[in-house]
Length: 398
Ligand code: C5P
Figure 1 (cartoon, rainbow, N blue to C red):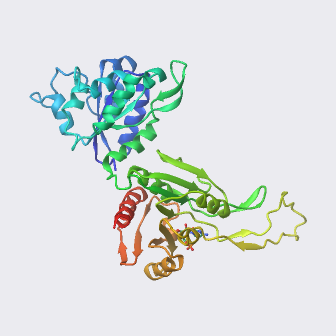
Figure 2: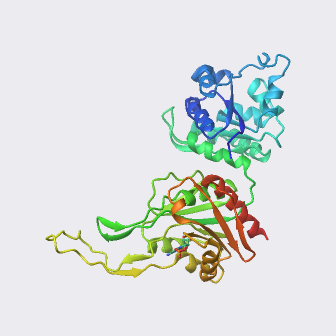
Figure 3: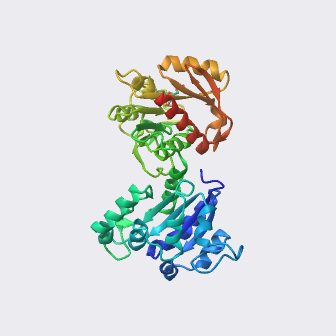
């Protein structure tokens, strides 16, 4: 979503300005072009040189000097004309107040005011002392900005530079990068609740051993991120993975298939997407103590019980959510997939080549529904997730 996007990164005078260096770097890593604009206050905390070195672009900080590349251009108009979005991070209480009230007394506030909101949406990441954040004046300004169509990435709670504890900390750079994608995604799941299962399950044998599989969880996590970007309230029910929780997603960790099912049944949703690679069997009797190794010839025998089919169980509820399943096949994707879709009783199934996708960063899938099959080209799991979410939103609204 951020690849080839031109982002104006505004930096104001807060201690969190040091985090913006990492933010600039992460945006560039995502393929974005970043132009930094600093206020005088920001330069008290971090130097323009840091950002020009990181972005390989000049840093702008003055309303009155023209741009060296084009001496006739007016920076406060032209910079945002060329940009796809503007993010102010950190955004101080002072700059929040100025933008909310249309004040423009430096380059950054002029840019915010002179922008065409349709072509260059604005997001801010407030960062300030907890009392400044809670002050009714600040809250009024934040509400005004939201009303004006500015996206506000609410600060997190925690220990502050001033020693106080409370909300006001700027979001971490990785979360801001996740959150910024929302500016480029149609908000077609606003007001919808989405549950996604992801990752492998772990079926215990005894307190130290278990059976699991190679699912990385990448596809499920990418879908959770994409659904949150599209405005949904997302609950991610995840087996053991090493992945970070996408920004704005609530995550519940589970281990076994039974725990995953119980957790799914505890929550309601408009859409249920089953991505987890659920173990088909579990050990019938989990040993309460570690099974001890005996002599060489004496190996334990395990007996197995079939696990519940989570997707089928949810799809059979009296008023089920819109259910989406995945199928990993090695041949006859369309035929085997349609048979599986009907057996599970679900409207949409996404079929892919199992061995070619496990752990990979990209994927190629076939969408199967009552209308037939629809192939999507190979793309990264993150691009695919956005595409699948828009396909699901389309079917949900029809
Ligand atoms: O039956 P199979 O494992 O091939 O089906 C795959 C689909 O069903 C996936 O969407 C998977 O998340 C879901 N599933 C489930 N519970 C199971 C087995 C699979 O939800 N026990």
